[in-house]
Length: 335
Image (cartoon, rainbow, N blue to C red; front, side):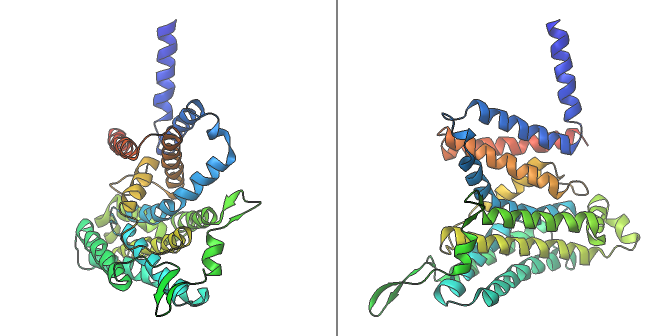
């Protein structure tokens, strides 16, 4: 009887894991069960724990929204973390030091991210540079620009003047992004992340360029022969990735109340992990932003549960790396 019960359980697990959506949700449920068991004296059951988790994972999720588009086309974007850092520094300079209006500064910052992504896309799509090389070059370049315009220093409210040390007024727009709404129950950056998710979903599910992205990822040559403007669509995917990285950079400046050119190292790796764990196939052609949302929750809850139980950063990184490899192997076995 026991062996029969175990066989039934394993059969259910295999059936649940048969599709990407089911696998992603199944992984999230496992993490939630672990949180319920290892709840750190009830901390996991408090809403502020979930609210803070969502706030923390939102920036990574914004990066992952753009990466989902790129990965569906069969590409990769290693530059999103550096673009985020560059835009965070630029946001701090324009809005904190120069006190520009958000109506002017935000479009400039978004255009900076969009330009970085577009350049990467042109290198990949028009000049046939491997995506890994093109975006690696952009990653280094964007980090260098961030250090150049900041002088290698953090851009914060405190500035050195002839009369001493002065604290500048923190911009109202950044203060709003760093705030919580609905009686302090939801962070504004979480709503921004959800908006990015909706935009990505609409692009993939409701508009022709999204369908073209799936076609390119499935078989680029067949898509080209079918009349799909491959170069334009691939460039669009990278441009959108840069744009979402810029949104995350502005939110980074708001949350950290500064722009730090040395920060956000390895953000792109966490964003890639979110996409992969969600179930979007690294070979392209399959996946979706809904899976990315589930992947963001999975990574967010995993990190939060480990943090609540006082697991060190080294242990969290090692476990995350193990989970990424397991997710990729599981995808390959289900192809």
